[in-house]
Image 1 (cartoon, one colour):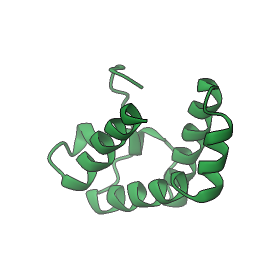
Image 2: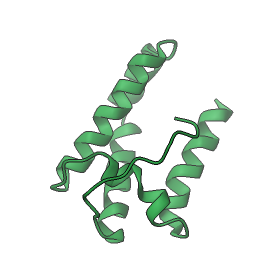
Image 3: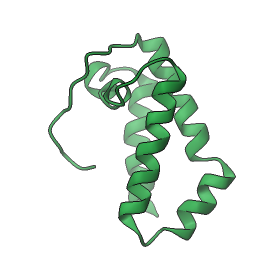
Image 4: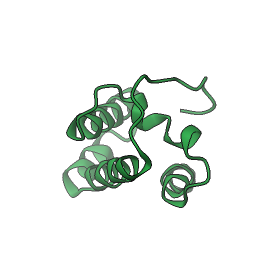
Length: 98
């Protein structure tokens, strides 16, 4: 993920929807079946990345949107929102601790 160029989207869900998307995506990502798959593929970065892409895409579509960047641009669009900051900064911190 790193410091890639910010991708844009033509879809701009309101902050309330973005928070719900983040909660939904997080619940899927942290679910036992997904965690088991991540443990199994922990050495395969491409597979893990693809899994996360699919989870994010599913979360976006669950809320009636199509462009995954509607979720991925949340930090850029709402930099001061605590829920958004926790989802992005907390996630990257947890990833570096493991």
